Image (cartoon, rainbow, N blue to C red):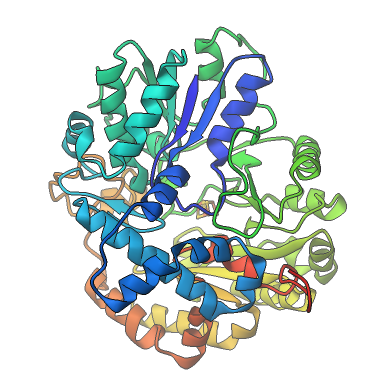
Length: 511
Ligand code: SF4
């Protein structure tokens, strides 16, 4: 079995999904190989010959090796300007390479017309014309070699829209080159497709199996290595090129649960798709994490859960994993205890990502977010005092919000800005299948048959253009908000944000 992470996903850490699948297969003695085609593809494209006509492009090309190395050096993260220059210059090279091949490519995005990732005819066209994909010279060569070595099935882990067109181009190539190879598609994006109301696969004949949720049991069953019991095992990163990612040291991604323990927010795709909460027992998480940390000595642990449960946070506080860590949490009463926050900091917690969404209590209640704004203020202050940075997520334009409520969010951020290290601002998209879609959905027909969202009419006329103007204007230009937004690492955002924090930065004289 060959497991592939297709381009383009941010090249800052290895793919957790394929590592967990590899762990399940290898621990049962089933042959399996892993290829991070996204990392390979981006590094290959960055190194390809390119003619540059302007000063910026020539500078970027001249320094490309140095920029790649500087992204892997912690010293760079002491200088946000130097970091920014590397990210922007590498982005420039990818942009030029993409344009010369008919695509828009960045370090975290991929788009190519007419191979739209939200339309099945776009993805079928990508499969029918793999030569048109910018990564074709690389993946055709690699796949020919890998498939010639005897793998009878290939699994693609498809988590982001940016990966879909390249995944289907690779699938089209495999179908042509090796028609008997079984092709299995899984990952977060595929799970969302399969949960769409009235889903009928447009990919029959091209893809042999599509898997919703964790894929271990299905892959093991196909390989004849599993009948019952718990199919999960510790992720196996041993086949991934851990030194090649664009981060200063190995960032170890680890998922302790799929789904969400709260699972109630009305705007959230997890709720709309009815994804079940499947946590790994805390004691096992702690053992696995310590084992992985001991084996790989990561610079940072990235906990991938939608929201770390209070019991897992307690587990981490009581039994530190042995490396700095960060992840998503909810504003829960446990974090209103200053001692608990200090214990978390002592356990290595350097940053918590927190979905606040709104600074208006009525909006939060109508969304069933389960946040009390007074408690959230206490949490922000406790985390600040404990030395834990925060990455706060805000969501504008929900049906529950109007302009006055959005202004209250601005006021809340201004009032509590000392506890907010980083900010993420997002505009609301209405998930298909959510209860609100039935009320506010516009019913407008769409050619985007794979889209996970539906157009809607805002009940108070607080529509997207107005929301966008507010967010980029009054909100984003507020001096306090703007100062927070300026801290955000370009492109890599929360993935690299912890690396700019004092606990991770080198001490004077270090490297
Ligand atoms: S806490 Fe986060 S993941 Fe969970 S339901 Fe709410 S928005 Fe979704």
